[in-house]
Length: 306
Ligand SMILES: Nc1ncnc2c1ncn2[C@@H]1O[C@H](COP(=O)(O)OP(=O)(O)OP(=O)(O)O)[C@@H](O)[C@H]1O
Image 1 (cartoon, helix red, strand yellow):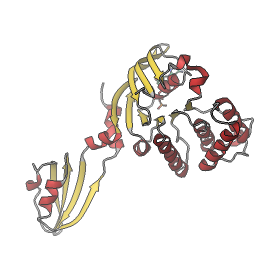
Image 2 (cartoon, helix red, strand yellow):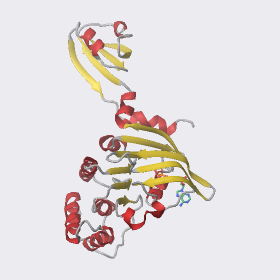
Image 3 (cartoon, helix red, strand yellow):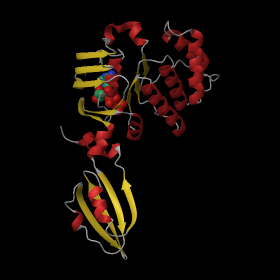
Image 4 (cartoon, helix red, strand yellow):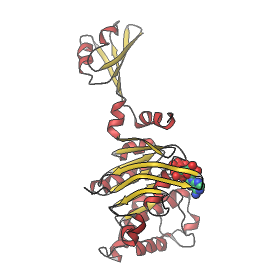
């Protein structure tokens, strides 16, 4: 299977400043990959190289099987790109700007009429008013126009640099739905974000970049599972934690007593089955499970020493 994105030993220097120190990333078609990391990690640099806005210092990049430096207009028409710092020509109204984008990005397989209808549908979905002048738009509304132009030609690959920056929660949710639809159609999304909850909702896998190096590549589910699960049980009467320690799947158990009842906290590294069997020999008054989130799983990769 040809990768949608294949990056091998990619280096980029801006003068003496090293931005990328040999990164390797593979993105399978039909998946959503979240690209995360602290400020200055190299995310934007990588994305700009993918769309040939920047040239690498060394290393190999293949996008949809082609070298972005030689793919030209044909490859560009298969990519939707939302830059991190979006600049739109402020002189136009939104409708003429989007007509213009459709004009330059539409492919022979889609008629101009259909392409125009497509931007209108997307604009409506995201709540973009096509009659507004671009210059007077708020940051969030500009971002929505940027999203419409990235999605409108149904590209095989979307490269989105902080796509939800400035969006209100309703539009953000609609955007995440659009991303999932793209994935369900077998197309690919490579997006960067500082909002890990949104990567968690939309991405299949996550790549963490720090100081120009990839420090983690993993399925989102696997990262979360690696944290294990924490379960709180409220049991009637005074119950000791000791019998729970060492049970299959239990990493640690602590008990605190609240009046006549016990609050038992179990940190699990396997299934809760054995612990729950033992718990039900008592009277279980309440069960409450914490779902580990991607943010707590990934944060350590932001700060750890190389
Ligand atoms: N045009 C440039 N000239 C010089 N240095 C640059 C330039 N663009 C980026 N850099 C440097 O390259 C490194 C990576 O920057 P990049 O913008 O790719 O990071 P990022 O992960 O996208 O960060 P952020 O989350 O803050 O957007 C940083 O040290 C940055 O200062």
